[in-house]
Length: 294
Image (cartoon, rainbow, N blue to C red; front, side, top):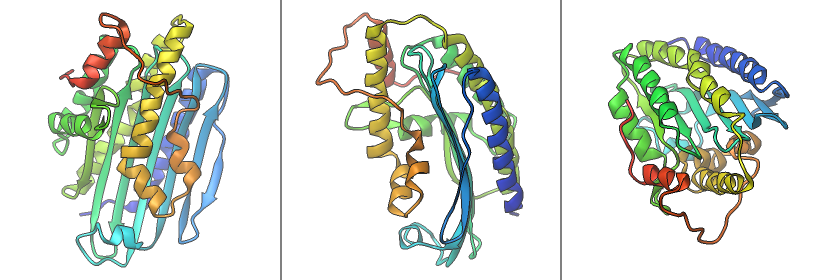
């Protein structure tokens, strides 16, 4: 049995509104803009971006609901010979200004075709620039609690999948400290819908306290340079590795929305040395050897 796709899309839209309100209040200096757009082949979305001088240097919470003829690039990936599709989803990214506050990314999505194909996908992950183990453990423990409350969820498997997915092969390191990642869930879809609603409703409590705790930590110019270099790795993953970014650009998705996840400032320094025994080195060691956190 499939969920009501219009109800799924409505939940994503309501979640976008509540998250933008909550994070704008936490930032306290700026609001999310509203950019409504239409897809020529059917559907559209709302891109909401915050750019300011406060704790959140950039944040984006985007929803889309699109439908139409299956494009050739998508047709090759489908098991059936579907002719039309429907897809809805929400994606978000939060890039704090303070190097001690981690970036958080999440997305929830639902897809179906006229031939009966239907699935959910999604995930949430954390990318720190300085390692505060209590933040990472709390984040993962909360994710495990959400998963354990739903028989369709599998925290150990999805945590491992997240570690595999958010990995930069050309750097030999993970993008961050992971979270959960799942894709093409085709069974018990109504139960998966309940899980996604539970996860979505907890996103602010998963990340908001971490951001609030770290966003006023003092930092110096050297720490900011490190922050921008690590953001460069984030951009590398999104542009060179991430399947979703590539798929969106290859299938004619709205580029401004697809690329809204990129950080506002980055830097690349040639072969920078990370001194052993430093907080920066401690982070890199974790990125090269993923841990169990919950």
